[in-house]
Amino acid sequence: MKNGDYIWELLVPVSWNTGRDIPISHHRDWDAKVRDIADGLTILKTAKGQWISPDGDLYSEHMIPVRVACTEEEIKKIARFTLSHYNQEKVMFYRIADKVYIYS
Image (cartoon, rainbow, N blue to C red):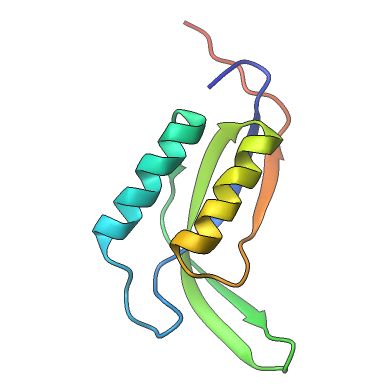
């Protein structure tokens, strides 16, 4: 993490589109890739979300909010990896802080 990075949050699925839980080992592989890109991450407790598909169907699912301090280019790389790693149609991410400062 470098001074001046943004803090981003993105939502990682808890289960596959079939409804089966994603194995912890699969999540750990994702964590390792994110650490390779951004040097670290903060994994929050699961949350329950809802969304309506273009067909009007309501979906309710659990997700894992994850915070990452990195550049916009790096979060986009993480989002692309998240799409493929979890076989998702979409991934949501958003900036939650404009600057990161580390003091020692």
